[in-house]
Length: 370
Length: 195
Image (cartoon, rainbow over all chains, first blue to last red; front, side, top):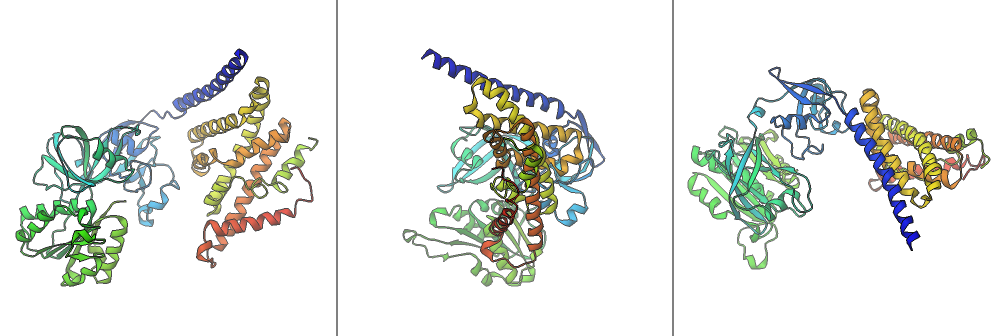
């Protein structure tokens, strides 16, 4: 018995010893081989930012409080962290190629999450990105809009005001919880109006198994301090007099709500129709608020469409997909802008339908939950 | 085994090709073989890693596991050795040969979990190869894998313009092509048999 035990213990010790030896070897190698010293990032030929080499450009910039947009958190799957690199990036990687158009390739655009900083590097980023800040906030209100959609209001603490355009989004930083051991970031559209620059509201729908949405729905409570970065995005109302069609599904209501509240303050005489797609009555929310806009604007219609209304819903409104109902509300397709927010599937289908109705493709703006 | 290392090297390429007779290392073979250039990069990386890990695992087995009576843990150790070596190699190549890193190095993480590498390490134990034989077998298997993926990539390149039924596109037709290649390689089997 003692023999067997001794045998087991020696085997474990030897196996552990060999594994530890290899692990230490790797740690030492990482320490010395991955050390690129201090590298300088030159931004727009205006500012030199010193960073420690050996990490991704996106990570290095984030450490220095310069936030390039990134929806996937640096995994190279969303393609939003594009950045012009004039010098010092090294060759293009196969992991970047699928996200870059021939024009972007010619312009030296790269994915900043894939480029590793190993030497001095010279980049160009839009001036607007200098506006992007990291905000310390406190949750001041959480409302349940539906069984799986919550509206969360954040009071800005430091900095205490934000300047954004209605329709833009921010990134929410999650803290480790339960089985999730790492911080992550996810993007959510702002649903409050820009005029209230001390608060932000986000509308967040629970995604099954979603790291961030589960965190928001199960962990966050009023009074918690969380971090947001932003604002990002070019999804905002263009200043023309064209008719507007809004199409949203689920939490896609957020940026449209912000846009409408913004227009309410500024005043707007444009003809606007707002289609909201949902499955059944229990997925509809803020209906009274949206209907109220019909009194605010001279020509505004809110049209909820249910794809699978339940018998008990007693639904008298429109059913099925939203697309067949566009036609009756488009006066002049050439003079119509569309603002879409929702799942990629919905956006593709709506975009296709609008193009078929002769709405110019370049006037269709969208924010897709990729 | 009384086979000369020289014969073993060629046998590993043609008569007992690790990919076409044992069908090992299929995942990266199918996913990377869309382009000849990247196939060559991956193939070269597999060749190099196979050669070195065959030698390393032979040493680990005969000099560490056998004396300590830990043979029953060989699977675990072979995988640890392969993974550590590939990681280390990636770091070294990235540091000292950036050009090589961008062509070959980015494929290294794919290799860590390539079953051809692991399979060769097991074969050289089962077939009781000597140290030199093991290196020859490892190198030969690497060349064999490189040859196989290059052939598939070349064929797939030519197939790009051809009609393939929707249900067979991608992995489906690649597996059929591989099957036909394997049949063709049976033609070599009369030369020498090492299995």
